[in-house]
Length: 366
Image (tube, rainbow, N blue to C red):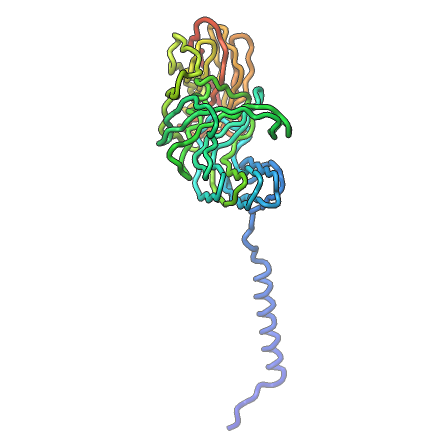
């Protein structure tokens, strides 16, 4: 028997069916969303926010350096024979919360990996350097002391900059504060408050916090980095610098006990005060705020009431007002949400004369 051939109509029907299947399959491919690529590459001077983090990119020769912004606190950089560039992710304003980071950092020449930031009134550029290339940035600077933190000794320095670029213009005068790690690393936790306190004890007082980033910097060099940064939960610290290399520039200590603490409990939170560094006419204070509730806070407020004439001169990781002896501190945009049982902190500098008794604290949450 001869095989039965399909009729013309049957063949056409199957062809139409196959075509429909192909169209449906193609349509399905078209409607499946492609994986979103949120990465953004920057090669010109700019600042802004990306995925919940502040970023900054600055270069004297932007065509030879670039930064790619990734998810969360992740960023990567490449640079080649760049004159000078600094780039990274972090926060604006910066503060004293511990900073944790990880990733890779490759340098051929003069470059730094550091927690880098600015303050105003006074205008200060500061570096906590965890790694550097073939040039130690402290070369030629006067050593002020050292501090042990996060598994290594950091050497403390300050330098003056004249007619140099800054966040206030291209030709300004300002001071640089340095803390340079002896045992280089790429990754770990930086206990920021330790360095702020150490600088203050050495007579180096920061101003009102501006931005703070985990920065990659290259100067007449080439290299690359891939870094992820976040707020951490602390490390191993030493509360004050140990002077080396001659007379310490720190003022004579006050009879008021350094490290004295006081606390106050209010609606939903507890505030604990520490006198971190005292030099007789001023001091650096720190306050830890703990959420006592079973749910996260939206915001918090700490009221500090002094018995003496203490006057706050600068404060970080919060906003404040002072009326006479009463200082009211409200949470910053980035640290108002404290998880149940969790803590955050703020720090400040203050002037006083006479006795420096700890303030009475009260704490409320929103």
